[in-house]
Length: 383
Image (cartoon, rainbow, N blue to C red):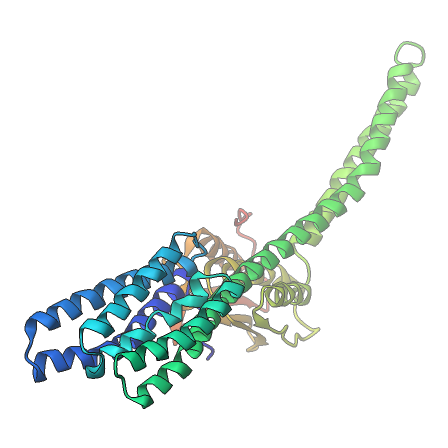
């Protein structure tokens, strides 16, 4: 099963936490040396407080830049981190592990600064930091590690923030595709309704104008025109009902193909199932409603990456089962849509279940009897 992508704030918190844990690995040896080998608790306290301040400012700057809240004042924050790290290396015995602090600012260079400035700053830091380390008496191997580590850390920080923004933009694009698919369906319905009603209403208006002209001169002509207007109005009502019926109660195959197309447009893997052409006519409408509600729930209430649809018959009932891996991101409660859908399926004499089934999977299953149930009255539509 593919892992679900957390929300942007969740990803940012994970990135900040993992970065600070990694940086802590650079500084723990120096603190350990002060506490348990030198037993200088004063120096250890100064080092711990300085490191904590650096980490707090580092995490703040990284978070703000991940959230696209970059401001020029962040340069001052980066300079402050660099100054504290260089001071720690100078006054806290660089050879005892405090020289590792010289690497800490590198990860923020390409995060805080624009690309061109970041390249120049990383190049300067790659030259100046090892030179400063040699001046402090660091071993040659440590100096070489710094010369190689600074550009790698700067590039790693840039790639991390870039990938985070790419994921965020892909999430926004996925939501926009889903909204576009819904909008296109609304436009299709509006276009069909316009095509049906436009001509009929225009004809009714013309007939009414003719009747108005002859109201004083030829009452028989007016009567004929009114009869024609009534006929055209009844035809228009029938045509509108046909349009709505075609929109709301189309074939199950059409519904599932449309559902899979909408989900694929939103970046969710979904393929329409094989459907037998021998399905009873009365099962199409209730199972079609189940498909629409399932698509709505997947798009609006989950972070699914795949959706699986199956249709089969056990002899007495026709089953539609729709599963997806978005249960972990689904809001609590069943909502009015699923409650209304359960009423629809029950009115058709069928069975309906919906809920998580473990492993982060959400399953919706609806069954309609092969033999049509006796109608129990109209059921209101679901939103």
